[in-house]
Amino acid sequence: MSSSKKLITCLSIILVVVLSCTQSVHSQLQVGFYMNSCTFAEFIVKDEVRKAFIQDEGVAAGLVRLHFHDCFVRTGGEGYYVPAGRRDGRTSLASEASTNLPPPTLDVDQLTQSFANKGFTQEEMVTLSGAHTIGRSHCTSFSNRLNNFNGTRSQDPSLDPMYAARLKEQCPQGSTDPNLVVPMNPSSPAVTDVGYYIDILANRGLFTSDQTLMRNPITANQVNQNARNPMLWRLKFAAAMLKMGQLGVLTGNAGEIRTNCRVINS
Image (tube, one colour):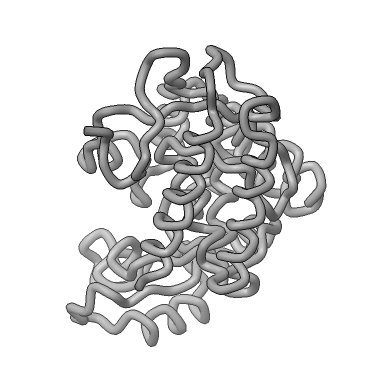
């Protein structure tokens, strides 16, 4: 069973536990939402996530991705508390991910507008981009920067040559293997730190949307600040993730609590 399927199964079990304990659903998200109806719900989530992470460090990146796709967990890593109480929607379309999540090819202005459409400031965009400190990427998401960049038959000049050479070894030109992946932050791919920003300063941002942050003096300054102040970035990141958790909330009688998170309740 793949790590993603194991994680989904784990979360499905957790949701069943929460459902069986919940007697009523309130209309406002809050830390400790299940304290009265299911005292150990959040502890169960945290413990299961911890055990899943021990088995597969890639789970951390998967959970961040899930959060961007509208999911709640009380995450590890930075140790912040996420208000619980979100209900599942009855509609789930893969197409909505591609139309709402910013692709890795956007420039800084496009990124700013994409996040602004969701109510985030430019600084919050730079802060949330730091989520690329963990996880992996398919070669197809950045191969345009390695070969025939902008039709010039060369690599992106903003990409560090030594880093580009390593990426070319990991992602050979002309390969059709859809499973080829590389870490987004090679120095610490499973650790939530400011290595992402340090890489950008060294022209080792993996995506166009990463390195483009240095093309605007304001966002470039924020990259510098985050690289120099890990604790400040952690605080900003937690705040931005909490804000994201408030988007499109279904509470009360809206939506549902699924007994199997793969499918809507019948």
